[in-house]
Each structure stands twice: as C-alpha cells, then as structure tokens.
Image 1 (spheres, helix red, strand yellow):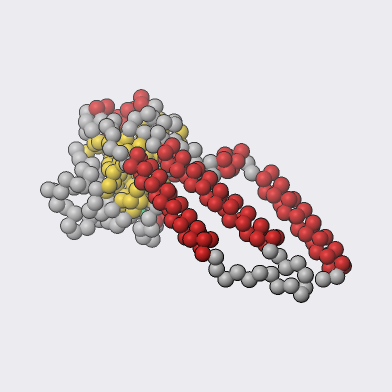
Image 2 (cartoon, protein in one colour; image 1 turned 60 degrees about the horizontal axis):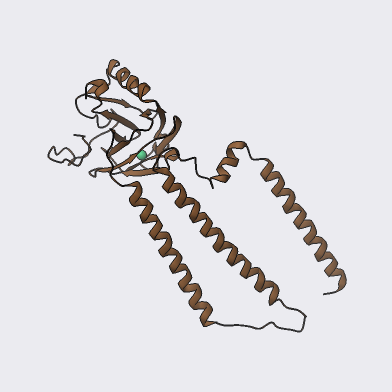
Length: 293
Ligand SMILES: [Cu+2]
C-alpha cells in the first residue's frame, strides 16, 4: 500500500468517526424524558407492584452480565485484530488451527453462565409465584376476544360477585385497590390466552381446563395497560384492557357502582356473549376452574 492510500484510509476513518459521533449526539438529544427513563430501566416499565422488583433486578443484572460478556468478547476480537494483523505485503500471519485450553474455556464458560442465569431465574420465579395470604380475589376470564373481571366475595357488596366485561370494540377496565394483595384466577372458556400487565412486569397463560393463578400487590396508584400475549384468533390484537389502581375507598365505591348498575351475580361470570364453552369444561365436580362453571 502506498503513502497516498494510507492517507486516504486515515481520512476515511476520521470522517466515519465524526459521522458516528454526530449520529450518537442526534440520537441521544432526540430522547424524551420518558424514553430516558426507559433507557435507565433498560426498556422495562417502572415496577408498579411489590413482586415486580424481583423481576426487574433479574432483568437488570442479566443486562450487566450480558454487557460484561460483550465487553470481554469485543475486547478480545479487537485485540486479536490489532495484535496479529498483517504487517507487510509479503508476510502471512500465524495460522492457528486449534488451541485446546481456549476451546475448553469457551465451552465451559457459557455452560457456567447458563447455570447461573437458570439459578436466578428459578429463584425469582419461586419468589414471584409464592402463595401468600391474599386480600381479594379477581377471577379473570379471557374469552375470544376480550376480558371479564369478576370481583368475588368483597364485603362492600355483601360478598356477592360483581363483574365487568368487555368486547372486542369496548375495552374493559380492571380496577384494583392499592397496597392490597390480589389473587388473579385465570379462566378461559375457549382457547389459550395470556393475561399480562406490562407495568406489573408479569403475565401468565390462560389455559382452558387448567387453573392458573398468581398474586400481585400493586403499590402505585395510577393507570396502566394490559393485553393478551397469546395469539388467540382473528381479533387477538383487540384483547386490550385498562388497569386502574385506586385507593381502597375508591375501589369499594367502584364495586358498589357495579352492583347498582346490575353487574352482579352469585357466581363468577365466565365469558360474555361472544364466548362459547368447550365441551368437557362444564364438569361441576372440577374445583380447579377458578370458580367458573
Ligand atoms: Cu387472547
């Protein structure tokens, strides 16, 4: 390579570095306060329940582990590229076919990483799914293509069941009291859905014929969004719902309003007019149906 080529190469590199720096400045300055928060959370919403903190820490430390691994790998790549580069036109750098210690290292290291990730994942899963004493129960029905929320056994409405039910064009709202542990019993009369609230960092499949449940304690008053996470048919994308975490007094008032509006029954309502019940799920002796008939 002649001196002219070297010069051109250096100029090209400088221009490239300048373009990258300018691009980075534009990119960062384009972030809103909200998206800066997302950067700090590594693309996770702020945890809004007591249980979500565990999930958030798992997420954050997984990123830390991935970035450390990335830094080591990138560092090694660039070091090797520089250290063992071709230094003159008539030289061929050392050609290494295999290196046993290195190969043992890069086989064992990922296995250890998988074991560590697995351990912490199971640990967090056990913490999140631990059955604690719940303050209230909500029987959630995922039906094609909306949700029904049954608030069961609350003293404010004499222990009866009050409910709200959405349709594919009318999004329902799940109202919850703050600082109370709620147990969600998940029931599907038709196909597999998945009940999830991003702000709670939690979701779980809603499987016909299977009793799934989990508990959360919302600790932030506010509005959240929820949706179905399992492709469940033509209008899957319309299986949205709103979540409203309110004070306990507001929650009880909400329940009495539902009762006054006639959304009251003796047992949980298990699917609105758009739902149909699969044969074989009507067995009354089955206690694992989350209270649905
Ligand atoms: Cu669904």
